[in-house]
Image (tube, rainbow over all chains, first blue to last red; front, side):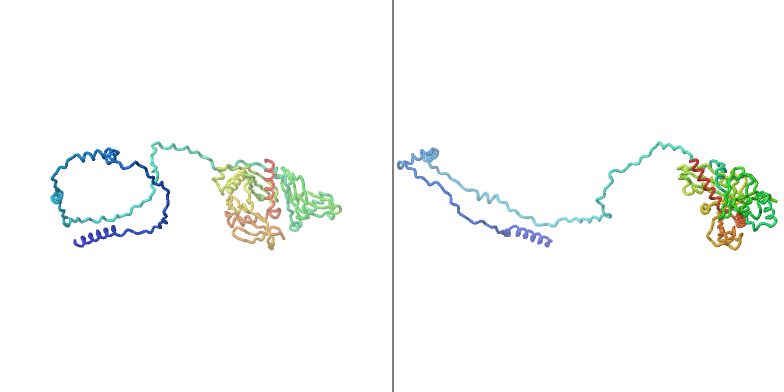
Length: 261
Length: 182
């Protein structure tokens, strides 16, 4: 308790000391004092005629003259006067006594608990929360369509006529592999068909060709084959041996179909 | 006397946005017995989107091939197509072996009829004496036994004809048809 009083007095004394302490002095750069001369009107002496009586002077100031006259006429009256102020001051003075400091009732203040969780500030709330609504009316179910993904083959066409426009290569048989008797039979048929001497004939190849429908024939000596162009009747015609020979004296090509045994 | 061998040569081409195919059936001499081709098939844009990358294989094998084979009076002994088509995963018709025949740059084998197996589906076949052997590639559906039978037929036909040539004729015929109908 005394400690608190002493601290209070110390604080008050410090406050007073600060209040009445010397004010801070600040240096002011004063300017140079220069007396300035000013011209003035010289007093003029008014000329008067001579001394004038007091009354006359008084007449010049009527209020003062009137007051002087009244004061002159009023007789002096003695009055008893007393001064009671000191007594009244003494009687009315109130002695103030400071009440001594008494200890107050101290209430215990509970320390509020710290917040369990720090509040986050600076969070921007969305401008508006979209409200969900439920449409009571269901969407109409779309109609389904079926697309046939199967690839149709269309139809096929007979194109044999077009193909027969192309030359067909036919390989010759190996005459050396033929039985000798068969080859003799073929040679005889060739001589009969062509009418040529067998010594004047050079056999180029033995082929199997349709009996009918061979429209054109060319010999490919380099590859030992013939190129034939066929007609449609050649397709169903039976295949028979066909011999191709060259006449030695003039190089002419001779050919004939052979009869199979 | 057995019926002569029938070789079917198949080719499908794309011309613009359309597909068409041709099937040539020849006898063992290479002489044509039948030739059919399809009308151009133009898939719609929706079909192209729905089928995606499977459009072309499906068109060639399932649509064009089957349409052409359906018109044949007798089934061929061999179904020959290009190696490119075969490499695309051609399964083929189980009734006849599908295969590709190519000329090779390999050294000739000892004798005509010799075969050198380069893989379970591929072999070199000496058809003509002194010439380079042919490369024969079978479809995945052709079993080993069927391959042996097909080799014998190839040797028989190769004695009379160039086994690779008819496919060039099919391509030329299709080209001429496209020009004519265009």
